[in-house]
Length: 473
Image (cartoon, rainbow, N blue to C red; front, side):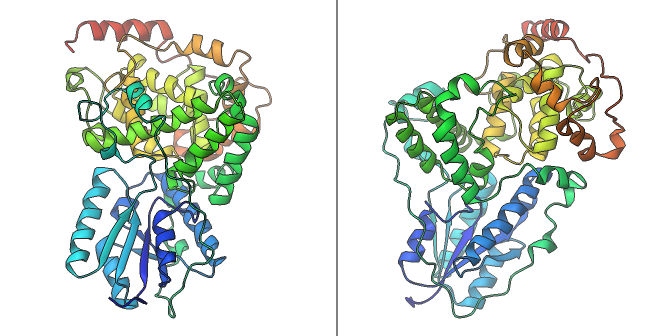
């Protein structure tokens, strides 16, 4: 092998320079490094908001690389074909990347690795998207963890790799291959007019992610336990959009939390538990990939959910017009910002699957289309947890009451007023933005009467429990 041959760094959901094992290893060789991103069918399949956020992340990351006298080479098409094209044009003898864990990506990457190795190319994957590889976390008797708490207890004291510093320089090739123009990809097209609204709420790039992490560990984590369930408060880290695209590594978050714990900040362990909850979702997706498509507990295949995404109940839920204030506020927050408070996610998911008796896949698919922090593992596990069909799930008989939940977590209705315009004489801009983002054919107006509940809290609970009692799980 020519020691001066370039290394192709195939970026996917790892748009950062620091704590990037593949990038660090490539730079340490002294060989030219050519960063590449490929808009292949896997990336093309992203929902509207996630693809929009990917476009913002790629644009920012390209600028970051330019600041290092490097470039991000963009290509569109089948990953293997495009990698082979760049290899032929540059003389590269290595393609390195950061591992991902969903079944579609695993199939693609395995194919790429097999073919390239057969052609004498050093095809290699590195860790970095997770702290613990799923195959390295096992129960005492072998096998994977089906329940979260034992997994937390098993890994909480494990060593996590120390975050790597960004490379001082990225060696560059003498000649750069051609690149597509990011604008030509139009990754915001599916957002239509909602893109302008959503853009106001995105904080993009590694620097923003690190600033957010530092700010949260400085001021927020000490109050995290008490404030994280209050949707009107800025009580969470806000790091999900960065972790989704790898603008920040979980290892860096873990070490920041350990430092906060050493400083006596009370919410640090709870934050670490949330990081392991994310790992648990990936652990399950790796070992039981059917969690993405089917009921994790097969007994739920017989449950009489409505499976029509165009059903009137499902449509009212998607549009934030259920007449249940907590649910509607959460759904509108997502449509305006691309994110939803975690308490809102639980209430919205419970209402759809239990009160409205609609299949969790309807909700999972809608979230995949609307979330800028979309994550395949967390989205699927969260929905199955809420519906009762998944691992470590909320018990089937637990039906969140969205009215009493609102009284408990938004007693002064600040969250509701922030996102629901109907009934307010002078609604805030946040509530009005919803009507600037939604499709015109929804024909919703801020001065229209607020709807009556599609299903009341009490009626929905009674119907759900009745359905559960007559099913054999």
